[in-house]
Length: 330
Image 1 (tube, rainbow, N blue to C red):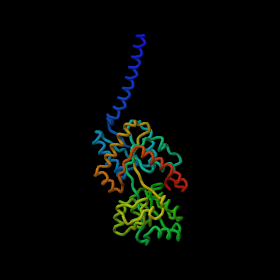
Image 2: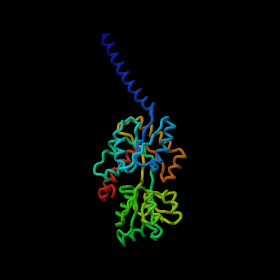
Image 3: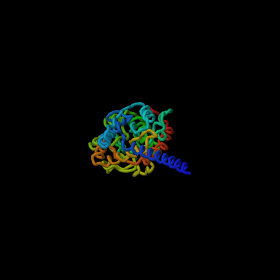
């Protein structure tokens, strides 16, 4: 009897020790994170808006967590190689991915995407979002969306529109507008938002969607005319310009988003720690002000909220891109 009781006590003690050890190890991993520099994979070149945002947030994370957040720029190829690299990294929270819409739109643009935007990643937080503005060069005489529609219907394909690249938000925005209004314009693709905006300011391309900071000064000096905000709400910087929702296109909502992700399997404690700290950072007065300069609104979300956004985007954009026949480089 005593032997059995002693054995039971030893077994019970061992089980309790194991449980306590596991709990301690789990807590310690979060408390000691990151322990060394963290690499953030960036599928964009230095100086791009995503790069600027993550460097701003990364500096504060370093100050709070005590280790550098090093930006690893791996631009090119639509971000496929960079995103695949992040997906296959060790899931310890020391390799992260800062990505935007191409994280999802690549599924429609490329035949073989080497990662799954949902299954291969643990969303951390939705960092920022932005809306675009539909503009026309002043020499066209177009001042409203209806005038643009009338001109496009009178001479199909005669008007050119600029985009920052195939499958980007500015491209998809115009494709959706053409589909909604039954119009056809000729697509002129550029490598980035800045070259696209320069072409519109110069009058080389008549119309297009663009990021507000890129064109706001030219709107103010009269060279470009704002027709509508490319989303569901008006912008404080352009209060007199209607949104496309104001014009009756209630299902028209195209926003550019950026967020931070980790490889699937990264400890939940680490994901939640990063999400909490970044949400706190994004509420600091200086951070939203810096984001506004580059045309973005600081968001900050829970991992679950960011996960829901990505899943919603997956259901929306790849299907539309295939229906429209858009391919990378088109």
